[in-house]
Image 1: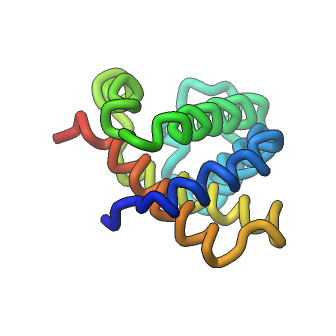
Image 2: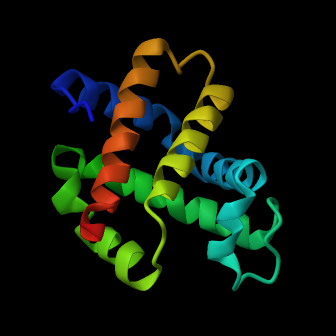
Length: 144
């Protein structure tokens, strides 16, 4: 994985400042997209009454995921340490396959590109991709 440069971190922070007001919408759409495009991910949500992409549970979890992304932006200088509790939760309690972190990251990127076509420049794309890859790696830390 490529490390985040100081410039990448600045780009991520600046882009997040622009889009964070719509983070709930990004999360709802990203989770809906994940459940549609990658239906195997529904197995982690068997406890939901309704696992359809637009269910209230899916929307709520999308909001939760983006809350985690916002938290990760605040911990961008040390994602591994900053996300330790979330890593432990996903590894030991939720037992989520870490491959799914890459899947949701991809869906988040796609949704951001769709929702913010002007702001989602190639430079933002590269920096956000690196950031989300770093976030996925930090979440997978306790699996090792």
